Image (cartoon, rainbow, N blue to C red; front, side, top):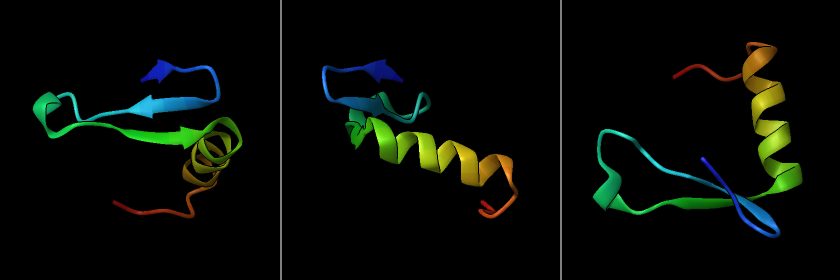
Length: 42
């Protein structure tokens, strides 16, 4: 993860050459909240 001015950059640490996904701060916070609530299963 990397904090950008208006987003949070997320990448796969096992495949850093694959690039990154930039999520708005609010979107990233919602993603984390949903994972904590058990709403997403990977």
